[in-house]
Length: 291
Image (cartoon, rainbow, N blue to C red; front, side):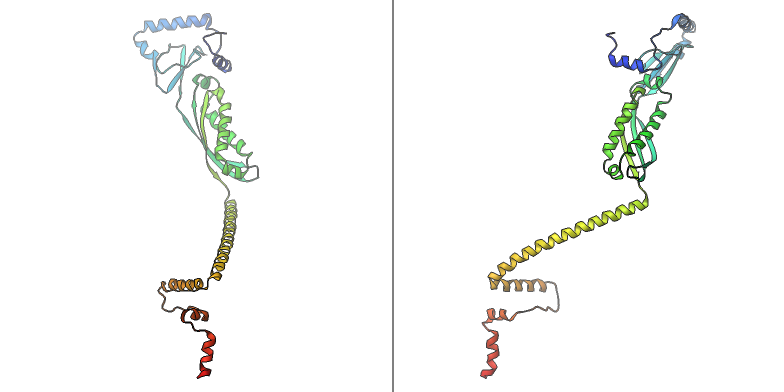
């Protein structure tokens, strides 16, 4: 085992299409030296054609006589490209936003929905992205659409609406595993919108309204029960003290009078007069007969 090359790099090398252990061969070396001679003869004009500038966020995969020159892409900075035998491909390493258009999906509970999303990914291996797939961005875009439909097709509508984060994480894991050989690393997957039919929206709204009304009725019944228990306790206290009942009547009268009413109708039991003036109802009936 070569100590200079790690195991993951060798595994990646075996997965690549363009990297081969064969050397240039006799004809290849002849063409290589002829290219060097051409550069020397036409120097310094040729130097401007051979030097290429690679930006910080870019890498260059160089093909020499159709073979990838190195296992690792070159850059950033200046690279030397020999005329006639070298061809290079620039690869952008910045994060790419892949907008998934609305996909019509039939959920597990036979509900037709339209779901769209967005995928954020970046190229971490320029050599794999160039050698293993024709168009890495188009392949990732189509794979993201297919994965979104396959994953959401195994979920019910309620699971889709309630578990967006778990579904997005599952889609990210599947995409990351599938695009590893392409040199792609999926950073994030988000489900933007879930569109359901208008008739189903009305049915869900009616169901939610009925649930809220039932909950409100239960809360009102519980309040009535608690109020009845409190009134029962208050009546037991008032029954023990008749004066407390009179004070409660007077307090109610004060509260009603504060409402700025012109006429107040207030029931006044006769036994209250007995407590205030010492006059009983029987004495009031006997007074005319004595006269």
